[in-house]
Image: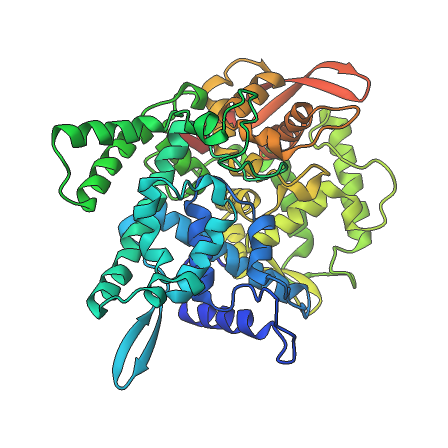
Amino acid sequence: MNDMFELLDEDELGWLDDFLLLRIDEDAELEGKDEGVLDVSELDGLMTAVVSGPVMIQPSQWIPQVWGDFPPSWYGEKEFQEVMSLFMRHMNSIAGLLMEQPEAFEPIFHERIVGGKTYTIVDEWCEGYMRGVKMAEELWEQDSIEMQILLAPIKAFQGEQALITNEKLSEQEIQNLRQAITPNARDIHAFWLARRAADGPMATFRRDEPKIGRNDPCPCGSGKKYKKCCLAKPGPAQAIIDEITEAAEEQPFSSLEEINAFARQRMNQRNQRVLDEFCGLSPEQMAQLLYSPFESPETVCFATDIASIRDTEIMRVFIPLMEAIGESGLKSTAKGNLPLKFCKAMAEQLRQADDEEGGGIRLLRIGGIRSEVDLEVLHCPRLVAQLAGLIRKYRGKFVPTRKCQKMLVSEAYGNIYLELFKAYTTKFNWGYRDGYPEAGIVQHSFLYTLFLLTSFGNTQQPQQFYEDKFLAAFPMALDMFGESSYCTAEDEARRCYFLRSIDRFAVFFGLAELNLKSRKLYREKYLVRKSALLDRFVSFK
């Protein structure tokens, strides 16, 4: 399986380009319909806007924009997974470049040869970018001077309103606009990155109420127009704009490049300031934990030469699984699961370990087992092992991969543990194990959870302590949960965080320990502390 941050190669881009176009039947009625995104250039533009803007836009929101009115007819689960994997890898690579190496970011533009001369075609990319902007257009501040300047080259080539089709521009003027697209795309990302750092953690875009027009009465009840009241009130990010204005009064800038350089300098300074709500981390460090968890050695490092790893919950299931698979393989069921006989034997083995060691493995289902799915404590590690590239299906059997065989022969269990850790945190969907909303920030912040345990876990802390720290750093998580007659959104967010991040992640990997504090009707409260393994496995700098 490809790494989810690996750049797409030419063959993968070509396949995706064909898929986007050919998903629409030749006989389809197109009049009055949204065809969605039709090539990789437009897709690249859309994704660049999504990762660059003022708010986080979930895949469940932007993927429908790709399809428009023509969602594909999938030939099977494999095709769906391949397309989603390519989507996520491409988006992650864009985000990674813009975050870590903005100077290396280059949009995907098409080229056409006419009369022996090569022309760069940017229209599709710009169309895709503005499609992404439109998803949260009221937050992009397109009326501001900064955004007018930065978006101008992109808008110039976008759709029927394109400047180049409505104005008489010279070939040199068109070329200048075309050349400004790439640096401006980089600067837009830097602009909103600084805004998000100044305003607080990135929020998730969801509009549940009608958009407020600039000339509508302000919802605060002042009686004034919205543009003359709350819309005009400066927020924390206004400080950067004020600094630019003050600097310009003392010594006017001679070019847009100077303004951008000055803004980047101020943005970098703000991004490197430690924040109380991040428990001493800077926005820059937090971004590395969230978006580059395994590519930021200056912030976090992992070790593999650790003896006690075999005693962790996930390894105590993985090792017997690999022993059962052996070199000859373990036959899968018609539905692609582990055989029922093995699952029942594994369940009995885990029950005995539970009895002997007082809860070493916590079975999640007590009733009868009719398939692997009923034994969640086995089902999850099996899925993660496949995502990690340690086992695979071959001719109706589960077999170890060559990579796994080499590590098992050399007893490199630390390396196996790290592969499982990476797959569980970056490829496996934590929401698969429970009924809570997707709430991706819970999973994306897995390293922040370990940072909190490293910082405060020497002594036992009530689970609420870590829940409080999570919500202080990511208050937008509350918007991802709904109210009910028996539970508030905050209660749901807290339960989801504790279940996914502490219980089914940190404890599952042997990085934290739980002690029961109290038990009330259907609710247990725990004391949490870090394990000895945590400090040996991960180190923060």
